[in-house]
Amino acid sequence: PDVRVKFVPVLCQHCDDAPCEPVCPVYATYHNKEGLNVQVYNRCVGIRYCGNNCPYSVRFFNWFEPQWPEPLRLQHNPDVAVRPRGVMEKCTFCVQRIERAKSDAKEENRRPADGEVQPACVQSCTAEAMTFGDLNDPESKVSRLASSGRATRLLEDLGTKPKVFYLQRAR
Figure 1 (cartoon, rainbow, N blue to C red):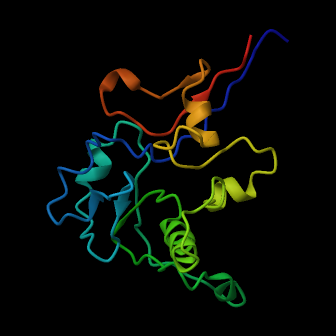
Figure 2 (figure 1 turned 180 degrees about the vertical axis):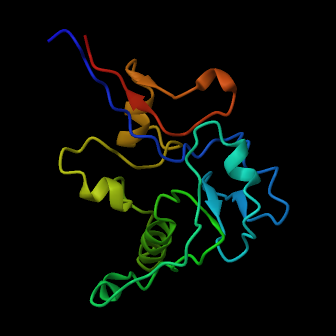
């Protein structure tokens, strides 16, 4: 009864000083203009340097050719490429959703609204334990949460400057 278990989901932290980026010889992982650490799967040659350099252990090597028996093949998202065997995989915060929201907003001559862009993990979390948004916008929900006194980052002392914040329980 005195044991308290704490589970912290760890995904790619999208670090500003990501140690996985400079070691990629083919520039398959890099920092994009939105500040995300992205992975170009069709450029990856599977050397695994990025996975070895990641202090959060969130990159995984795809050892096997993916198999999608019928009818599971119908669940594929046409906006997302199925990664072949021999590449490194990581969370990209559903970059295809980010690009679609930006494109839709551009057609309407506006900026994407706060909360309009939602990666699949945020959308599927019914408890609203995850929030996604623009950290550069001081009025956004995610920016207000990140600047609250409850926000912490994993392994912050390493100097990787992770962009994923975790909120501590208020006491």
